[in-house]
Image (cartoon, rainbow, N blue to C red):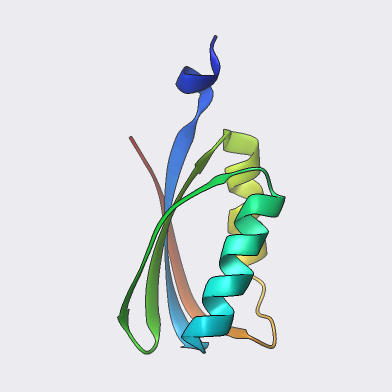
Length: 85
């Protein structure tokens, strides 16, 4: 199986308290550290962000687990994730 077929996309919607500048920096850094590609981030309000990342399935699950843990920058109230084509 080639690399293109093994890459999957994950959409994560995070609701909570965060500062956009720091959240953007932390999220992009974590995504890259897990060996994935950052596709898009959309802030629909001050407490709502939607990310789209791609990578292998194992790495995507690591991001889901990491995103569920609050940090001093991201105070997560609700998280929804979905694998997309």
